Length: 242
Image (cartoon, rainbow, N blue to C red):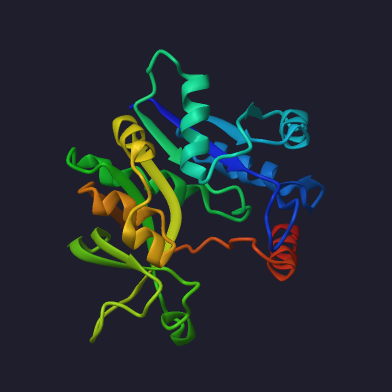
């Protein structure tokens, strides 16, 4: 497969404004994400941004950036615009969307996101990690995967929820918001309107499930730190300084 890693980056974060350019150990956060993505060894890495200062910072550290519109409602819309600009001839088969606020992500789990594509029926692939802390099982900010086990390390996603689910004995899985798309699946997804369950749960991936698309999740051991608050940023600085 010809794979393109795209990292959407926008400056208008409500909880941590300007976070793509937040300094971590001498480099902007978005550059750390690009480094981790490049270390995954899957292929070309490009930051998709709506802000010239982000593009300039990315270029200054030796990575590619492409400018996109400011009015996108989601990262998926942004990476689709970037894909069309970077690959108008349609040579890329697979697109990996790595969130721009994961500076500590393990490159190995970025690579692992492609494993579900061993099954040609899979449209979108993503990642999950078993929840081990009880307080996270009931935290609505921790999105859970409800899925049917296909193997010890893979689920076929049936639903995503902020609730504690599924009920009963057994593991619960934290959804890691990193997605790999077959090109046709991304094109179909961005053409869909937001769905009822997507609006209710505020989870974009439910739009794909409601449209009958198949999402499989690879279960990994490493949970990346998402930087959403000043406290998260300080934790990322602590991790990467060591």
